[in-house]
Length: 92
Image 1 (tube, helix red, strand yellow):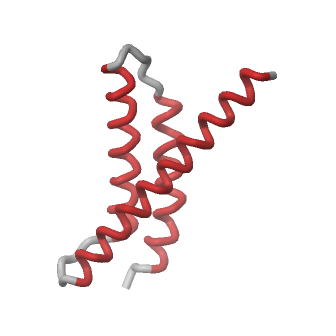
Image 2: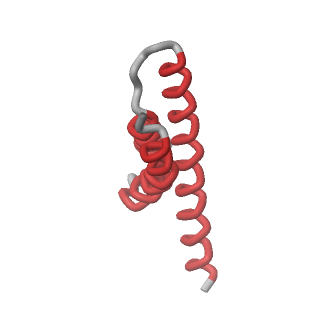
Image 3: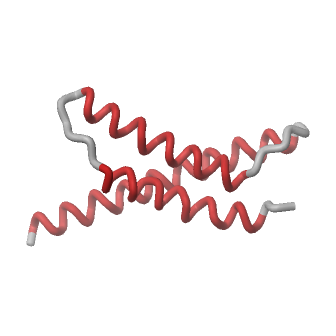
């Protein structure tokens, strides 16, 4: 039972940090757009979430941990969830 709770908590953290990274990417895209540089917020948010996921797993692997595709998936899923609203709301 305790192992199941730890796994759920870990997935929740990956999803949360993926969403947070996506919000940073969306904010950066909106700043670029304000300066006249075309940058799709949804795509920038998704890219930021994916970059965080891959960077985190590379960092984990470099320190003796294991590479986890599930962790990458949950982090990218969080980024995609946050970016989907930006893609729909900022399409203009």
